[in-house]
Image (cartoon, rainbow over all chains, first blue to last red; front, top):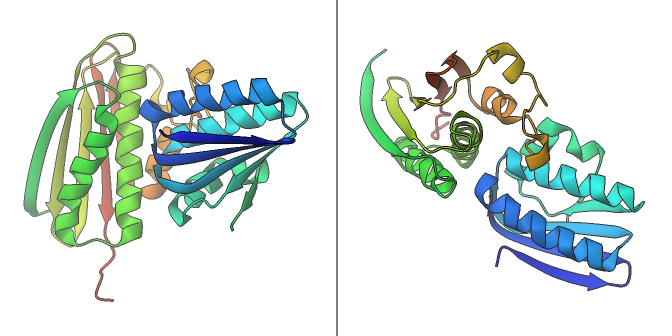
Length: 103
Length: 145
């Protein structure tokens, strides 16, 4: 499974894995959004530790979840992106919307 | 510009082929023993170009995507990605960062920006109704240095 979701208190953690492209992003998006609607958390953590590749489809994925979390006054944290994924994110300026954390 | 090596692939515009296409081009580029960063840049740029063919050029239909990759003298990789889809009316506008015709599908409008910034050269030629050809070139870092 490309997304494993853990919901606890006010926090939803989506552990993403594999490659994020136009083909895989749709399924990931649906699973995360389902969990968000169910638990309405104040914080969404997108954990990229197990993501080996991401193109700009991943930007759409983060950006879309950012908008969704804004609607419920929540925030998005991007965790452990690889150097290359960070480079793609920087290009979009998404690092100014979502906090990027390592560890 | 001396051609050292060349390969061609042709495949259907199915989204599951996005991963196949970027892996195939990277396997060819790997003959140059590139660094991790160079190969990640090529992988991402090819993924963007192929996704454009699937999402935009052949929207609602299916067609063929042709990729020609060449290794040129001086550790340079040349990649041509060609579709026979709907074409782009206004290439300049399409290349603007964040411009997208598919916001509902969460397309970020950054495909061409990624290609432009991750590769050394990018050229886009398009004829509405006939298709689009994207050519990208990148000189690879020398691993010995």
